[in-house]
Each structure stands twice: as C-alpha cells, then as structure tokens.
Image (cartoon, rainbow, N blue to C red; front, top):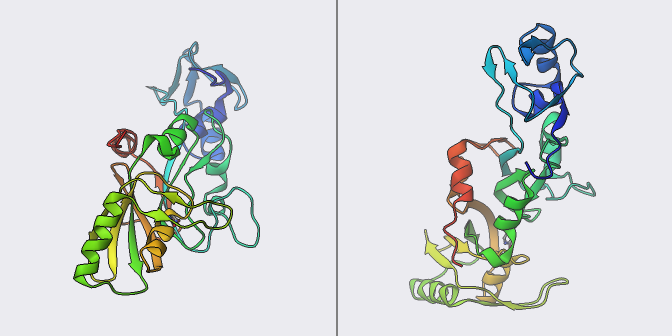
Length: 257
Ligand code: URA
C-alpha cells in the first residue's frame, strides 16, 4: 500500500471509508456492530491494522476507501485554492468531514478553474492521479462550454476551428509568457456558443485562445475531463463522490500522447 499508514483509528477508518460521519460510526461501534478479528470493538479509538486485522461491519467485510474522489459543479465566485482571501474557496463548499485528511492524504483540487469559471471540478487525495490529469505532458482532454461576447459568422467559425486545430499562439498574461497551444477541437453550437477541447491546461488557456482569435469569453464552464462528464443534476456548489464507473472514465486515458 505504498506510503499509506496501515495502523489507523477504527472510527476514522470507517468514516473515511464512507460508513457515515464520525458520530454515525461511533454509534455503529458502540452498538457492537463492528468486529475486529471476530470480536466486537470495545472503543471507538481502538487502532487496527489495515492488512492484518479482519474488520467486519454488520457481518460484512469492511470496504476500505484509501482515497476520496469527488465531483463538484463549481459556482462562479469561488477560488480554487485552499487559502481564503477576498473570496470564499471551493473547499468552503465541502462538508467539514469531507475536507479533513484521509488515509490516502490531503484532499487536493485537480486543476484550477478561474474565479468566474463554473463546472466540473474534481477533488481527490490521490496525488498520482492528480498529477496525471493535470501535467501538460499527458495531454488529457478537457472540454469547456464557451459563450463568446461577439457573435461569429459562419466563415469565421470555420477559421476559428481551423486555427484551434492547428494550435493558437496565445498572448502573455499576468506572469505567464505567450505560448503556442497544442491543437484542440472546436465545435460550434450557435454563432456565439461552442465547445472547446484543449489538451494542456495552460494558464487562462481558453480565455487567451479566444483573445488571440479577436473575441472574448463571456461565460465559461468546464463540462468534461477525459471521459468524465459533469453530472447535469448537480446544481452549482453541489458535489458528490464519483462512482466506480466515473472514476474509470476519469482515469482511462484517451489523451493524445
Ligand atoms: N481556461 C481559462 O481561461 N479559464 C479556466 O478557468 C479554465 C481554462
């Protein structure tokens, strides 16, 4: 299990593994429903060994969750940072017990969205996965819904799409130098809305692409990372755990290497 700590408190293990809040799992333990090597655990703070002890909850083997994976529909007005400032952070939208340290480590954000950007944001304790999804060298596709300030004629739409496919030279911004973006994919939905798939995730990449093309982004929402789509039933600010299928969709690569 790599760097995972194997000797852990029983109540923390259960709470981290999705068996409820600290008080829910305390009740399970005190009701005698949790056994360690066949014997009901006497206290909530008993320590157990992940690979040596046989733990059962209500007669069923404990399913240990080492890492946490959440999908959020990020609302505008929240910063992707763990530190607050003038604006609230996306961590403020998590329940207190979901923010804490897990068996697999601290919860981190997978790639940042700007303050005014909405949509698919992943939180995980899995640092390896986080690196693979965000490092520009893996070219993981990320798709955005874009509303533009200025409508674009059909002839220009074709030019935009060709430019994006060829790779747009984006201007410098803030502390970031200009760069040549890797080729992306642009699908028009109307004369001022489109879906853009990019493969790098450079600083303000989407906004800088449209600035370079002579337009401006009025509204931006991330709708896909890799093969994982934002759950349309999540209202802005809501989040939930990923299902196993969703985790595979996020992990299985269709990146251009
Ligand atoms: N590109 C941007 O310009 N902003 C985001 O929030 C994400 C991608």
